[in-house]
Picture 1 (cartoon, one colour):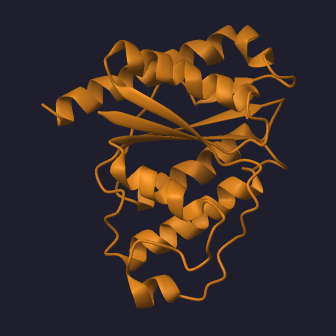
Picture 2: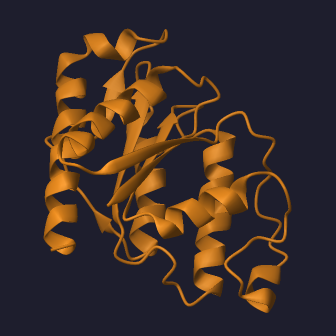
Picture 3: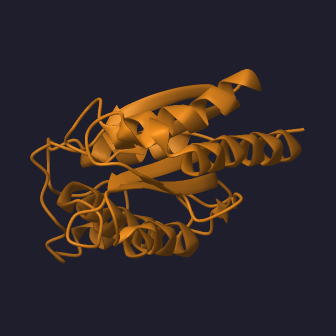
Amino acid sequence: MRVVGINGSPRREGNTSIIIKAVFKELEKNGIETELIQLGGLPVRGCMACMKCFEKQNGKCIIPNDGINDIIEKMVKADGIILGSPVYCADVTPEMKALLDRGALISHANGGALLKHKVVGAVTAVRRSGGLHAFDTMNHFLHITESFLVGASYWNMVHGLEPGDVERDEEGMKNMQVLGENMAWLLKRINN
């Protein structure tokens, strides 16, 4: 079994990366492979609504070489997905939004089943507020892809500003552990 985590933060080793790795730790304890994919900082663009993905139906976006098609391909091949973003103006980063918008359209263009039955979760690193909206944005995408959205002991937000600050949010980090445990449990049940 394999889970990919998509880091929507341009800070490669920032708080979003730290919380995704906290979920990974629990998955790896259960023998599940993990891969952290860096999305934040890539020169991606949003969906152009050109509808070429419906014309071609090849599981790809017509926009070439910006990394989105490679990330979507890894998501399709994985058993599970974690989406992670810091909060930007009470929402996800522009890179994460581009992935969600383009990924949703590509999925619909290809029968709506590209991510069907994946075990999924979303996490967000937040300084103070706006985290719930960012969390909802990622969850909305995960719901419309017919994935199995995994719950934890609270909303999946961890507080911190500077890289590493999230590690002092004990309740938030505990929630990342619970999310990892619950994802591992569901992955094992599905794959038995």
